[in-house]
Image (cartoon, rainbow, N blue to C red):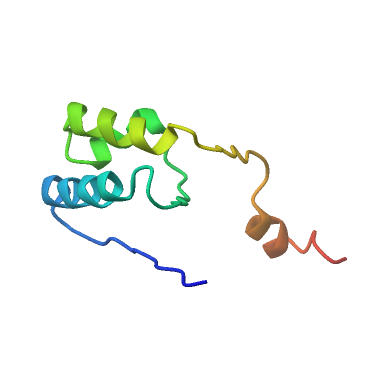
Length: 87
């Protein structure tokens, strides 16, 4: 099995949002996609160049038939830094 990763790093939010939308639109119902983020969906428009319509369409495609794991709790790294792990 081959795994392909996309790690976007575009400093132009509108251009980057358009490219990200194109990637997810092409993968929609064709390939599995996994995303990790600490940014809640309601804040994506600001991250994606304040384009409300594109942000809504992108999130809509991502969450359709999705398994969303909301992982709240104390930071594992913070616990490790405080020595609370493996003591």
